[in-house]
Each structure stands twice: as C-alpha cells, then as structure tokens.
Image 1 (spheres, rainbow over the protein chains, first blue to last red):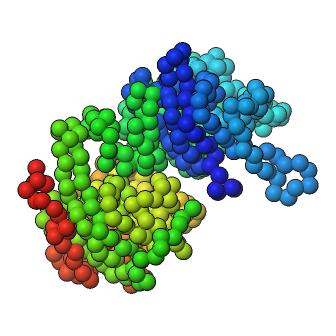
Image 2 (image 1 turned 45 degrees about the horizontal axis):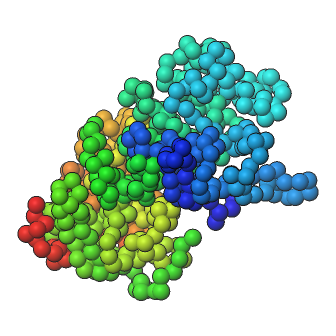
Image 3 (image 1 turned 135 degrees about the vertical axis):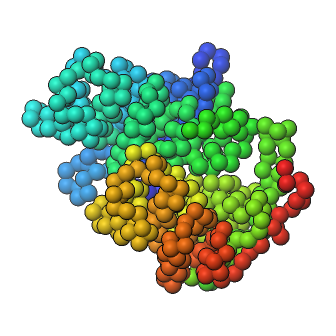
Amino acid sequence: MNNETPLLSVTGAGHRYGDRFGCRDVNFDLWPGEVLAVVGESGSGKSTLLGMLSQRLTLDEGSISYLTTRESSAGREDGTEFELLDLATLSEREVRRLWRTEWGFVHQNAAEGLRMHVSAGGNVGEPLMANGWRNYSKIRSEAEMWLRRVEIPSDRIDDAPATFSGGMRQRVQIARNLVFGPRLVFMDEPTSGLDVSVQARLLDLIRQLVAELGLAVVIVTHDLAVARLISHRTLVMKDGAVIESGLTDRVLDDPQAPYTQLLVSSILQG
Amino acid sequence: MSYNVNNDLPENAVLSVQNVGKTFTLHLQESQRLPVLHGLTFDVPRGACIVLGGESGAGKSTVMKMIYGSYGTDSGRILLRHQETVMDLVTAQPRQVLAARRETLGYVSQFLRAVPRVPALDVVAEPLIERGISRETARERAGELLTRLSISTRLWKLPPATFSGGEQQRVNIARGFIIERPLLLLDEPTASLDARNRGVVIELIRESLGRGTGMLAIFHDADVREAVADMTVDVQSFTPAREQAAA
C-alpha cells in the first residue's frame, strides 16, 4: 500500500448554486482506515460537500484527487498498481467503474440505496453480478455471508427490504455497499431516523466493519455523538465553510470556534 | 510521516514538556479567557513514574489531555519519542497523533468511554487486535488481566456500560495495560477501587516501569502515589493568575 499518498485529497473545493456557494474552500486528505465526520446543522453545506465529493454535484472550484487501484497488466508480480485520478476530468465510464468497484454510498433513506421490492439476497448479490460474478450459488453464499455479517437473520434472505424495519434496511444497505470490497464509502446520516438503541447497534457495526476492512469513510452527520463514536477526524461546517477541523476528540473536548463551542454545549447528556 | 525536531529530547526521556501554556477562551461567556497553564516544563524518563500534583482544578487533567492530544496546546513544545523519531505533539498532524496513540502513547482515563454492545473481554482485547494479534490470543491475554483485576468471568461477555464504577475502571485499566507502549498516562486510575485492587494496579504499574515504560500519573490515593512515584511535578506552580482561573 502506498502510504505517503492519501486516498482522497481535497484542495480548495467548492460547489456553486447560481451565484451562491453551497460549500467553499474545503481542504482535507483522507487515508485508508480513516473515518472523517462532517458535522453541522442543516444548511451548513455538509450535504453539498458530500454530493461534490461523490460526483453528484459539480466541482466548481478547487480540485479533488483520488488514488485508484488497477489490476496491472499481465507479467507484473504484485498484481495491482495505483493511479492518481483528478476527479474533475474523469469520464462517465471511469466514474461508473469507481462506483462499481471502489466506492460505496450509504443513504439516509434506505429506499434510495436499495431496491425495495427485490429480495435482501438479491440486493446484496447485485453488485457482485455487476462485477462479473456469474455462478449463482457463489453469489448467493457470498450474499448470505454478508447478510450474516450485518446481523440479518438467515431466514429473511429471500424477503424484500420493503418488509424490513428501518434498522434492518440500513444494515442491508451497508451489506450491499461493502460486498464488492470498496475502498471509500460515503455515508449520509446513516443512523438518523432510527431509534436510539437501533442507532447504537448500527454504529457499532459500522465501526467494526470499517476497522476490519481498513475502509476510508466520509460520514455526514448532524449528531456529534455519532462523530465521537466512529470517526477519527471531524470537520465542522457552517454557512458553507469548514470552520474547525482536527482529531474528533480534540474538536469535541477543546472546541476553538465560537460556533463549535455552541454545538458542543448543546449536546444532550445521555 | 514523522519528523525530527532538532533535537532537545534528553537521551533517557520518552517525553519532554517544554514551556507549555494553555488558555481556554469561552466564547459563550463573553469570550472570557481562562489562563490555566504557563511555562509548564518537565521530562518523563524511561522507566520512571512522574506524578502530577496540585489541588483539584489546578489543571492536572488538562496536562494529560494536552499530551494525549484531546486538548490543543497554545504554546511551547511537547516532544515525544515515537519509534525512531521525535514528534512535537503540539504541532503534529491528526494522523501523526493517531499513529502515536497506536504505537507509543497509552492513556488510562478515570472513566471508561464504553462503546455500546461490545463485551468487556473485547473492549480489553481491542488494542491487541488493532495491532494484528489474533482475536483468540488477544482474548486470552484480556482474560488474564481481567482475572488479575478480579472481574468475574460471568461479566466478560457483557458490555461494561452496565457495570459498577469500580468494575468499569478495572476494565479500563486492563485495556490500558494490555499492550506495552513507551509512555503511559494514568488519570486517577484507582479512584474507585478497593485496597486489594489498588494493590494489583500498583503491581501492574511496577511491572511496566520495570520493563522501561515511562509514566505520567495523577493519583488520588496517597498510598498508590507513595508506592510508585519517582518524582512529583507541582502543576499549581505553573498556574497563572489564580484569581482569574477560579471561576
């Protein structure tokens, strides 16, 4: 693994809505195994930032580079090679390749990330088929393994997510996003809207999987407790700008910006 | 990624705190400024236990948190011997601080920040697993430590959030001592323990010191302090303007 080049490197990045910037002047690097939380209230620009990073919104300023992995041509011994991609210049085909093989996206609303009327097994098997898996029983056993990992009872594999609880749907969505072995996963408020006990279970699961798989994660959340529990570093956003960033425990225990102090002092003590 | 600071870290020290200052600015209270530390200077040698002294509120825990990185530092240097290099924790990047925590810098706080649902045995084993030790071996080592600290085996599979204060603290201690790092920060690790368990913690500390770990500690109990302290640093003498800070 190339240890000196970050997986994702964001420099002076901004997205504009008309003549107003949704987010601007964002800078950070992300390495494999790191979880970066983006926190802020609604309207702070955190979802715009996530949209821009994940190629759903245009990059109108600055640059974003991503270190991709390719199977190297025959004859090479180590099997993979790295290439730094400038995301602004990527072809649609390349972007689709990244979504198929290296990137995942976990939506707040599971209905956006799942096919609600296809079986759970089918939802998890589909990304494998997109990656060229053809053997039905292998696909099914891999999907079963992943559903087990996200704690979906094995007798529910043939049921559709439409029949699942909110927490179960999110776990299926996570399985669908991890089954093909991505390196970078974006998460947009993955636990909000769930009951507190279900949230804790899901966060613990995400935390464990991230550590085991060495994933890089950008997670957007309005909940500082979520950031505390699973992220290494935190960006605090307000009015489209990053107003504070650093180690998560330092941002939360010794906040410097007036707005961060206000946010931290507003946490309900559990 | 680590870098060498031209090099004022004494040969035998794992940590050197040099002329460190810290002021809190409370933006929600008319930007009131609370100076808590000024000119703080001391070293932690290998195999020695340095104790932070001073009244409650003198800033002892603040010193610990600045070294661990959960508080920022306004001025001065905090030099840490990290692998083959010297890192200034005041200016280190988050990624470097995380690497230092993984390899060099352990912290046993007063309270266990328990993750929901994770069983006590795994809470203790986790630092070993993060270092690539097999789960089985890690759990075995964790079990040995929990046994030494008299945590009954029937609790091992339960998440510590439901434990008593003293039990949580012992889980926390086991987690802190399961891997050996060159520097260990101990923030009142024995505050809610009975005499027998305090004795076990003293043993653990001595064993670790004997293997060359440097320790920086805050001890509530005089008997623990007397048993392991090599030197006391009076934090109060580095506290500026007491009347202002007494808010």
